[in-house]
Image (cartoon, rainbow, N blue to C red; front, side, top):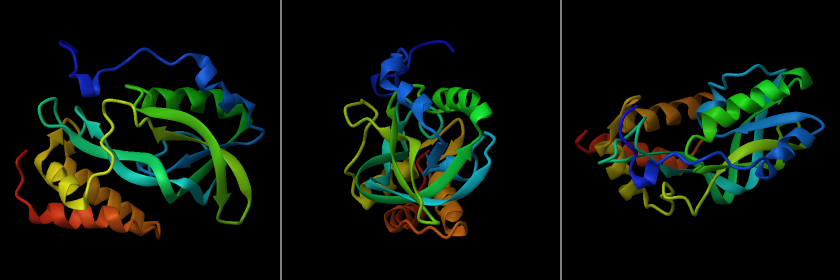
Length: 202
């Protein structure tokens, strides 16, 4: 690709292993997904069920300058932000697949390092408590766009489009997938409803 990305979406050098090596120390390797990973994990797993993490919530808090927006008009995609709780999907990975899955997830999630790799406690639907690998948003990153009111997020969503399609479609499809899985996210549903009423500027 020619040219450089704008400051909010510029890729950075990979983090040193010391920040993320904790993933290899888990007895059972579980992954927690809260966005597209829930219905499109892209890796092999041996067990799958709904789960909760606490202290973090699903949020449209990450600016997207490529897939759902442009350098001039960034869109918004999901991140796991501090506060509240989040119901998502848990995947158990076989020991023999751990290294491959970890590499895949890092390539998928750590492109610009707006996400941080973390291990956190997770409550499975069967009431087991296990540690899980997940990706939380870095509030100090230039792509962070937390704290938006539903109306402001919807205005951005309605106005943005990138190489993977319209930002409005991303939000609408996410809400539909969540509902199919029996998960309600009322703030995200409000954003989708408001955005559907706004004229597209993309």
